[in-house]
Image (cartoon, rainbow, N blue to C red; front, side):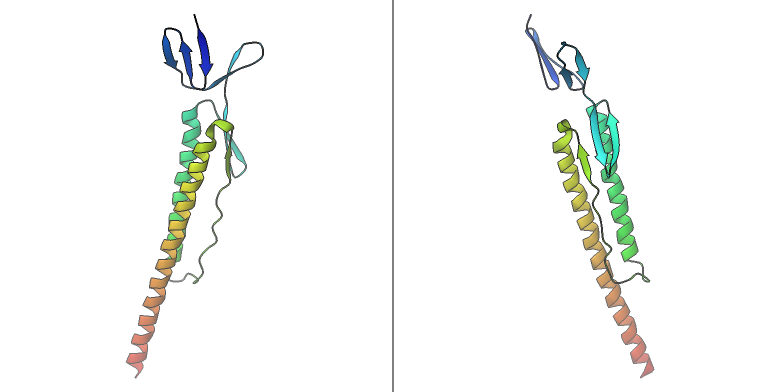
Length: 143
């Protein structure tokens, strides 16, 4: 009977069985489950499965969307300053099996913030144009 463990699957001579989590084998031949670690702005989230770790990344992306929406709303506030807010991207790192997913999440979060800043800038320009039209109307009324 041939057995080979590679990544997330076990290959037997009779066929292949895919298992849920990655496993590593120590020197004594014992199989240990891999712990997936995701760090978001220094806070560490450890999970026993790939699905849980990907959920942490998804939550980070959802929080970025909420924050970006808040930035866009603040920019449309008529009392707001005519300066775009500074946005700091969250620092996300992970253990080796998640590096590709983390890189994709970072890119998506960056795109979310860039879109929000672009929308905020457009909203600010519309607000400036509205204020200018209002000033012109007042000037015409005073003539």
